[in-house]
Amino acid sequence: MQIAGVDVYVNHPVLALGSTDWLPVLSLEEEPAVSCDTHVAVRVKAQVQLIKVRVFAEPVDEGPGPDDSFVTVFDGPLALTDGRLVIGDVMGETRFVKLVGEQGRRWVRVAVNEPGWNAVAVDISVGPKLQ
Image (cartoon, rainbow, N blue to C red; front, side, top):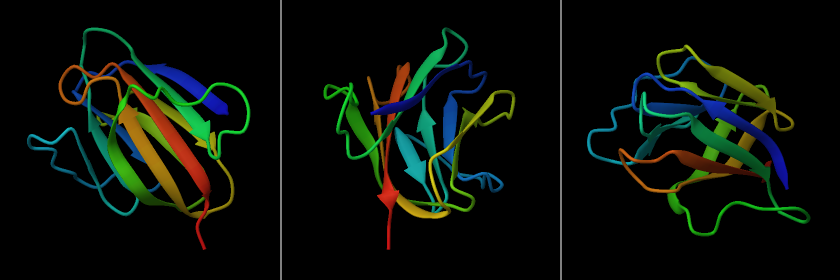
């Protein structure tokens, strides 16, 4: 079930998502996405158009789910220190915050319409709290 959606303008070609904690320096180099324990940095198309981001709660029981044609660029656990998921540009100009549940680690899947410099749509699936 989709729980949020936002269009984000990015001035720099990196979209960040994760905990409300300070965003550490993550070097993408040539990868479409990189991560640490609390954040994921995703390469996207900058300054040309808005980046469409949709957030889904898993399991998807009702309503539309993530786009199956998108390519997964991250699939793993993320620690959300206060249960909130932050999505924004790495320059700190745009920031969207969504409460997804209790604090703790959650399995998160990030998929994009086209990995690399041309990604303009991102689907984020957030699973239940991990034990």
